[in-house]
Length: 130
Image (cartoon, rainbow, N blue to C red):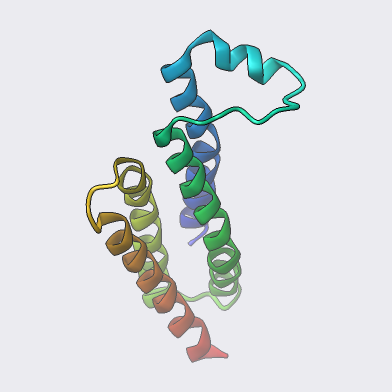
């Protein structure tokens, strides 16, 4: 479970760089000049960069549920359902980023739901021992 926690946190860190990376690719040196300055005015994001920023915000919100559940699973030495739930959550969150940025139909919502099924599995496992 510890490796899954670290993998989810690594995904979060990578997502923090994504909006800037997308903007740098789209606008070039202008973004680096902005990043080095005081940032008094917000930089208008491209559509893909704005989607990446919203995906990051969503990940921030999901971490408030995932991390306590994962830490409880470690504390109670749970495996099975809790680990599978965490793995499903991680894989869904990995898929969520490109699904959000590309905006293909209902893909983002379906992947989000799968991730929350993983959280539900973790809740079920933790509540089963409490």
